[in-house]
Length: 159
Ligand code: CA2
Picture 1 (cartoon, rainbow, N blue to C red):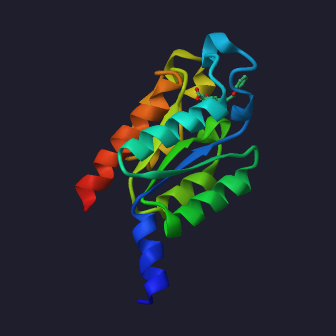
Picture 2 (cartoon, helix red, strand yellow):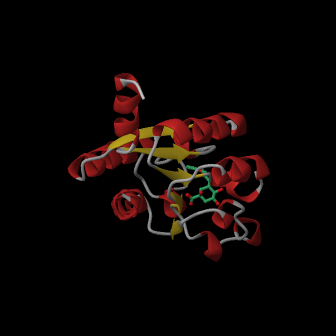
């Protein structure tokens, strides 16, 4: 292994990917009674601060496109020690996303801001849950920081 490869590998062991699916860019602007008033940018900043305090870095992303989400998961295979994902609407529909996550060997935390089980039945059957190491549901924006904390523990337990 070259020095460059070794350096990349070392960084990957400390980088957590936090992936957000469609419409989450609107957080804080619509439906605050369901999703709260915190914006996605604020959540990203809180994730970075929490990760830094635990000796990790964060790559925080949002996309409205299924293929882009799949590509981020594939990239995580090379660059991340763990994935935290709020797949939003793709949780319930995307076999492609499920397939890509199955190929990621590290810990995976699925997260939903709202309690999906207290909502309409179309929100009850997440495909992503089939491959998740753990799930955080219904704790609002605070769920993201809890997920970072949990991920740090999961990564430490593997090394
Ligand atoms: O509670 C969550 O985090 C969800 O993943 C959010 C998704 C929904 O499809 C899932 O069932 C649960 C929807 C994201 C829509 O985001 C909005 C943000 C602000 C205003 C309206 C929608």
